[in-house]
Image (tube, rainbow, N blue to C red; front, side, top):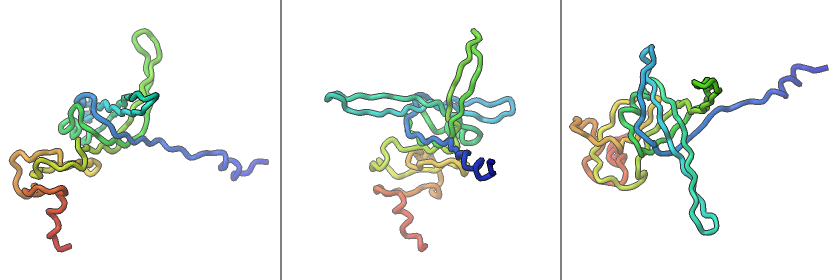
Length: 174
């Protein structure tokens, strides 16, 4: 005789989550659905390297990333080929029949978070005169990437050069 406890023990939890840090292989492609929803496609490369028999070996894996709504528009506006990004999301596989009737599959990452990374994270910048554009709450951005065009001083982090732009906030009394 099987109890409800036995059935519960047989069910396993599942998790569909992926995290990628890589570089864009091309500029983001921004499109709009028939309902005017923004959708961007990012092609992100991750490369692993190792040494075998004294020879450096590399393997690059390409990931197709799908980004929706305001986050998609921000990616298209601020990202470009070669830019490093952190992407968090879930895997999804689509199927379709090609023009020859063959069933095709494509596995993509549906992004929940895209974080723009600095090409030289932790390196000293040539200047700390930056402006931070507005982003949706889901969007995380490295402010060191967006040079200040002619923004008002209220957007400026600091005019002084130092390793940590947050040092300019040290005189705040809290």
